[in-house]
Image (cartoon, rainbow, N blue to C red; front, side, top):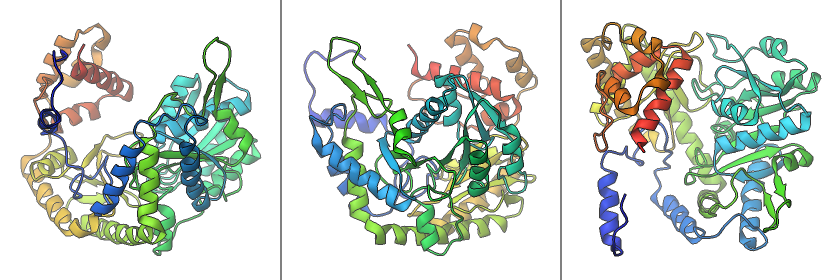
Length: 473
């Protein structure tokens, strides 16, 4: 971008923003079943947006300069702690940062800077990212391929003298099932190891589902042996993006997540999060959302979500060639195809104005499509089921995605680091992906089929190159 010689008007800028967003997925209405969370209540989003804007220029770097952030954060964190078994928390920018802080605190408390994390293969990649950044190793254990939950005995066998943290999910994102939290936490406690519950998705959902009648097992800080928990408010809290909380059972462990530095001649550095300067906008948005909905609002959303998820599971199971994976205990639903290429189905759904999130096969779990059911889903669940049935028929007619002969073997044998961006873009074009700016959304069935056929480490290398090319120099 070249800066304009003179400033542009607000109207001109907003018109260009609208142009840049023309290929974006819609964030309201429920037809995008990942990434966005919609209450269906415009007044709640308006309250959050106004509070976000009010706090936009407040800097969370120094709480003594802006005491409003302390008061607001204590209210938000206190609400999460009240719902999830107590504890001492930090407001963060999202689940990845919450997980990063939990891993750092556990590493430092254990005193093993080169230790390991024991976690299910279904645990969120944020734990792998935290391990990568913090110099730790990951020991991933398999899950039961019927329930998709981690087995307690596998966790116990993986724990060793270098383990600094054991992880369970409530629920795991891929199949929406809750790991055996109490049993795993007991095993971790017996070994003298911290146990983190990743409730980024479920923390602000499962209690409301339980209140709406769902059978939700204990999973929070009230469970003996659970030492920390992450809960995203920008998921089922319906707050604007950039809102999560990490809770610690012990205040001393929370202090281990902090960072301070006085070893320089400038201003004193004290950070509760990975970031230093950061806008208080997300904090304001989260605070306003919680206040605008209130307990009754969340219970109502929980009832609608529970009903929609049950209807979705029932409806998908009745569509020939499709099957729900596991028995989801939350409002995350994943389904695979028998005789139907789910990647082709996803493209057919996109043609009909819907987004279903593809998930690649891994560790014995088949390729599948993922749906996040939110508060707005119930109003459109029958339309969603019709779309899935129509898309399944279309996918059956088209047949599986056709991967060019030899392409998978070619990519697997390439030194991707040796390719320049132009050559990689040509390789992407061979499977129909146009990486030029403004090209819009390509059909992804062949791309996903290629990725699905590659080992995980090669997938990662391809994805890194893809990111580098789309952002350019």
